[in-house]
Image 1 (cartoon, helix red, strand yellow):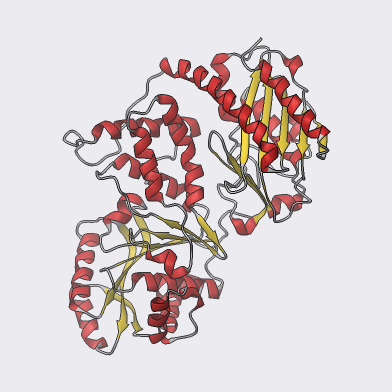
Image 2 (cartoon, one colour):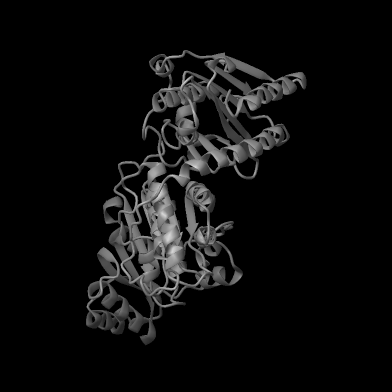
Length: 262
Length: 265
């Protein structure tokens, strides 16, 4: 039994509710192994496979623009039987039929593995922010929001939500090998349909925050100075120290060795 | 695709005394580049807190880097670990929100910073973020203010070309001389090419030439006083809609012969 178990059934209730309301729901069952997942994908997946920006002029479909709304969260469990392993569920329009659109975006990822526990929490959390690991897919994210774009190029090659689901599965399974089963839900119908997800997300973030808090307590950071000026006599040095910590955190989260170069 | 094409990346910054027409010049360069189809992926950065560039180009700015800076500083004050982590995650998202994408180009406004203090580390985060963002563009035009420090501290430490914009006044020339000193002696910013553009020129070219030679700075060109530009400025109309005019023609020559010669061969 793990912390998020009750929420896993709430997510399937949510899907059932929308099914009853007559929303179009498509389900795809994907292979379990990383190689099989990546095989036949129309785009490359892996570190830096995507570009940092997909500009508006190159965009086929935009998802979760702050003006139209987004909701996302991640759940994990230590009981793989709770997860419909390999399932991608799409509620709403798919990529090919949405040229030029800006759709709301809901994304729920559920992963499970017998060895998953609190100390893997952060790594699992972080893995959902794939940013530039999928060719033709740009993701900008905050804790509550996911804002992404699918390029014209990628759409032309056949990029769909099944592609995105498979790519996420492959990324999770290779970054966190203890993940045995994974299920992904996408919602692209309307802001109203995202509302229940936002509420669930809020509760999940509370739990997540507490888990994270415990872990960070046990960690300390290197404080590195970037300032060419004399900070000893600066009244603001305390604030700067805090920010330096953030820089380090950012570097760690992004694993970006290029950070802070001129 | 979204990666920069084979076009060689160019970073060009304009600076000079306030009121000399830097913003109008940057806007006209933008128009020339867009019209010629030689801009590639174009990013404009308004590093002047007065934020004239968005107005001159008819871009409606929703969020500035200055506001993001404020949010970072606010959150950093007595923040708990968890929140700090959140802010760093937010940074890319917020920067993308601050990127105003319109037809043909994207614009980033640095904006005003309300909080006093230097906060060098914040600048370094922002600079890093802008650097990352810049990688996706072929051409980056920066509209700065008189002092180069703003550009250096918050945007970038090195450019390919630095353009000093001056009007035909002794005050404009004095600022030009100071900038030249800042670049060559104090090394506030690194640049491969440095030159001056005389704006709103009304005769007296030989005097200006002599003055530039005294400062020891090359001339990129002269832009004549132009009623059409003045009218567009007055009416708050986007300079991208400027019809053919003497100022635009002069800008085209400067852009194609002096600033981006390799693209106009």
